[in-house]
Amino acid sequence: MDFKGKTAVITGASSGIGLAYAHEFAKRGSNLVLVARRGDVLDKIATDIKAIYAVKIETIELDLSTLDSGQKLMDAIAKKKLSTDILINNAGFGTNQRVAKEDRKKIQQEIVLNVATLVDLSAAVLPGMLSRDYGVIVNIASTASFQPVPGMAVYAATKSFVRSFTEALWGETVGTNVRVLAVSPGATATEFFKVAGASPAGGLAPVSEVVDATFKALAARTSKPSVIVGSQNAAMATITRFVPKKAVIKIAGKLFLHE
Image (cartoon, one colour):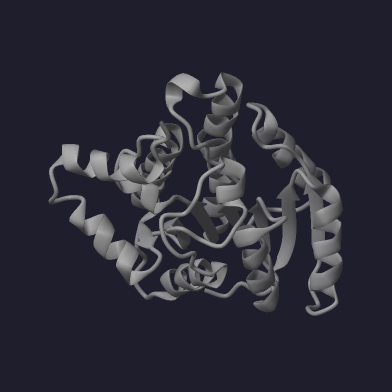
C-alpha cells in the first residue's frame, strides 16, 4: 500500500508501540495525528519527527477512557479539516489483580479504552474509508486474547473482544481497498507491565517487531484478518487450541495470579 501523503491517526502515540508506528508512518511519508493524554510529550515527539521527515503532524491531548472520547477525537480531527486514511487503535492498558480486589473504576476505564473507544473510532472512520475506497484500520490485540488469564481477566477478555471484532470487520471489508488488521503482540518492551503492576513471564520483544509484522501483513498481496507477532507466540497460540481449557487457565494463572 502507498502511505505517502495519507493521514495516519495513532492513539497511545506518546510511547512504546504507538511511538514506533509514528516514526514508521512518517518514514513512509504519512502525515500524522498523534493522540495521547500527555500533550507535552506528544509535542516533543512531533518536533523530533519533523526534524527528520518532511511530514505534517498534529497532536491531540485526550484521555480516551471515557465513553464520549471517541466523538471528542472525531470532532477535533474534523476541526483541523483532516480525514482519517489510517487508524491505529493502539491506546490501551491492563490491570494485574484478582477481580475481587480490582478497583472497579479502573477496570471500567480499561474496558472503555480497550473496547468501547476502539469500536467507536473504527465505526466512525470506516464509512469515509469505504467511500474513498482506501483505508487502513489496525487494532492492537494481544497474545493474551487466545486464552483466559486469571489475574489479568479483564485485560485478556478485552483483547479477545478486539481480535474477534477486528477479524469480523475484516470480513465486512473484503473486496474493498480498506485493510483491517488485528495485531497480537506478546510481551513487548513498553510501559505496559509498569502500568499493569505486573512482571513479564519471559523476555521482552522490541517494539520494532510489532511494527514490522504490521507492515509485512499490510504489504501482502492477499489481506489477512490478523497477525501474531513472533513465531514462538504464534506457536503458543496454536497450542492452546489443543490443550484442555482447564490446563490452559491454570498455566496462565501461575504466571499472573497474585495470592
